[in-house]
Image (cartoon, rainbow, N blue to C red; front, side, top):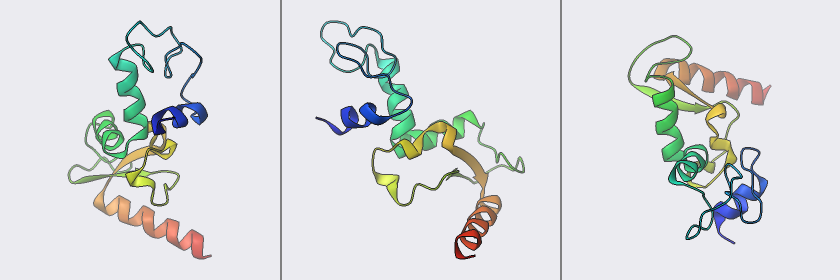
Length: 119
């Protein structure tokens, strides 16, 4: 089983079923194995692969900080920390778990998160 197939089996966003698209659940056309169309494959990767998810979050938030509205440079923050899973396929990269922050807001968020852990 591939890593993406294993992940779709447990992902809350996916709809895996025999003979159906792993993302949307519609029948898979002849010649395809996992996705009914490229759009479903793209949606999967945008929610599970860090580099794609990061790019999608920046576009969604119009390259601005969601907290102060500040501009560049912006960073993408995991709302629920991913704890080192940046280089792996992971549900931690779902777009609903990502927000864009300016450097100052990201620094403040990280400092607050660290102080909550140590308390």
